[in-house]
Image (cartoon, rainbow, N blue to C red; front, side, top):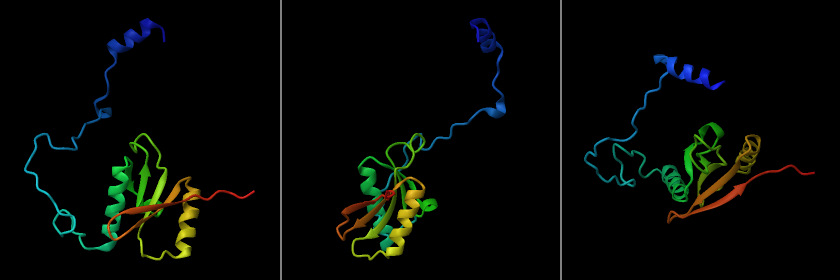
Length: 147
């Protein structure tokens, strides 16, 4: 546009009210009373305490988060988490994380299914094994075509 038309547009344009966005705060404006929640004890905020599968997922989530990754639910891709290198609004997930106890045996059919799914959606599958001390070991599964 020529400069005059842009100036005219700026002076006369009004944004339609029904197209405006509303910002919803996602944190408190004023700090309220804080209390520490022990994730190993059942509470209103965390009823899953003592459930092994939830404890394993907690350790995986915490470890990946502390490494700087962003995580969302991986249920639509058959995993526990989708792992992003940055803000999920700006990046695609690089990994599908599957959480297991270190002693848990994983059926071969589950590994094949995860590998195929990861390949079809162009993501690397992370097999996340948690030991009894909460340390997480990772194995990546990325299939490529043989030629």
